[in-house]
Length: 89
Image (cartoon, rainbow, N blue to C red; front, side):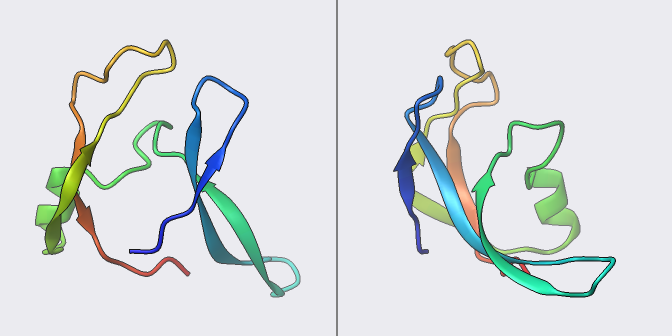
């Protein structure tokens, strides 16, 4: 999996930046952009139930990724230990 970590000046020292293609709904134009992956928003992540419901194949990470809340405390759901390989259009 291609990963690019970029230094940030906010509470987090790293964030995941992805190259994605967006489509403008009014003009139908496509644009390639770098997007910040932010799964901290209300439910914008793949939870275990979504993965099971859609029959997605999970792969264990070689090293779990710790997850922190905005106040820098560890998230009670724990670390990210698996991934799903998919394509974002």
